[in-house]
Image (cartoon, rainbow over all chains, first blue to last red; front, top):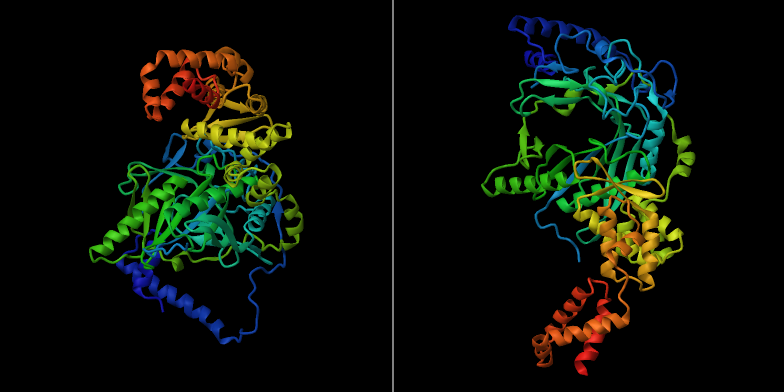
Length: 93
Length: 495
């Protein structure tokens, strides 16, 4: 069960503000998602090896060869918060 | 003698080593040579974490990790893979760091250091691969930051994080461990420790076998020693005043030399590690034999060989192998057929001592000269040639210059920024050793001019002899051999 405190904590981890009304709403929605996935618990899975990748592919590498980077003005094109070539953001507590 | 560790100090280190000798970053083809680049000019959609991009792992980064594993005598995992470590902080714009979690590529290694009571083994818990975050500059101090400027050029650089067991017992041992580790990594030719941010250390420390505190953001080996000394003192003070140490993360402020509590509400489980679905798992144990073949002779082996092959002392061998560039420099000198013992003395004692005095560190060796950096890590216009030592050593060995003059020659070479040769300096400064008849003439003069000191000596004040030797050295501008001067004086005083 997800509690209201859990919702607050999850909100804090993502650094988003959640108001009281939303906390209740998200608590209900998250619990409904968990409950839905809970149906899977009914299946016997003790002897099944977890699948992390559907394709059995190993060892995908590239060679250490330099490729072109993006020009600085393109990198900063989508922000208005820039200062001498850097991104300027608020302090994250 | 066994070191008792009376204050129950346990120190464990986490060392982030940047693989800055690779040409490109970990998951994209952006150049890794970013130190002089304009901010954010060495980035691409992958290292900026833009949606829809697919990272592909640099094969050389994996080879470097295997090299590290073998050099630290660790185990290479049969199967290894990446995880996402989720956290909200702007140093990585994706919202997570690609790292390794429960299947690191290397585990169970060790490094042997010169500990408080002789050889001491520091266990290596693990070494794993991860990406470097971007660089943040806080406007104002980290506690009262008014905003943050971000440069993603460093974002996505290949890192290897090496984690030790809490086997370190004093700040001095921590520093020795780091010096040794850096030396090994430089031997492996996977990183340039002189570049800013090449090696960054977090330290865990506890006193009286108690609760551990983590110190983050230490950028130099001296800084680690100082941060640990401060933190140990702080913890002991807290306990002395009846307080309790809380498990926390503290930030080291290098300028003020103190650690500051950083309130973090994140717990390990908050990172919500899960397998990185964009990167396939790896099975690379098959590479071990070919990687092993590329391993160079490591510091301990070279140290033993130097003692054996060149018949030099343990101390000289240790100093000469403390940096791969210096070891190569020394071997080039010996290869020219000069006396290896004398070459060791003049390189390890005099040249290194002089570099130390001038706050210079060896930055590189090109097969002919060694080059230097200052304490700020800036390359400086100066060098010392193999041929300088090859000229100097026989002159001294054959008694053509005194040891005082040889020291003077080494200083003058450095003063001339590596331009002048020993021959030229000896000629310019008249440093050729004074012939015996000149010394005997000066001795006679000295005895005649210093009747007071002579009387004192004959009256039993043996120290006066040293004064007289000093006078002879002064008159010959240091070109006399001090031993010869002493012998001649003794003879003169008896007669």
